[in-house]
Image (cartoon, rainbow, N blue to C red):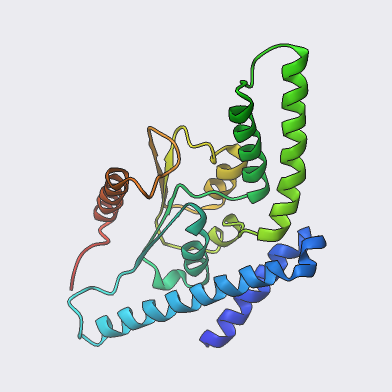
Length: 232
């Protein structure tokens, strides 16, 4: 039943984290993050069950089809739900999502360091080489520390279990969080049918209404193209 399924999800998340145990596990932080994820998983699963039970009983004007979407750091939960219950999800969208949190942290510390020091990645000279080397060292160090604290979900582990559910990725072509390390594992793990849209620009800015509206329109267009918005 659902109780057993959630316990299986907890076991899977523990397996996810077991590879990277470190000193920050003493603070029990990874368990707190997993508990938060489980609460979100349980709430979303209950909502899906409610919607589909109403539809199957003929008490809803909607078809009961569920399309899940998650953006940026919120992408893992919809991916997990779809991986655990692919028969309940008609479509999945991962919007500006990423995996491999250590690589994300490492790259971001290096990028921010270049900005603060007002140097580029290509400037020549001993001083610039030393500064870039120091930034890379800091990135490597803090990516391990913060990565062990966060234990952010490896989305690709859940995508492999999805069957007969279309998956769509929306990304920015200049997103500083997206690289081969942080995107390709998800794309390669996702089964067919899958598709992707690359937008001009960087990472999504939720505080920009025009940008959010543009993403919503793209989501609607994809749902229409997959015939996921029909009503009963």
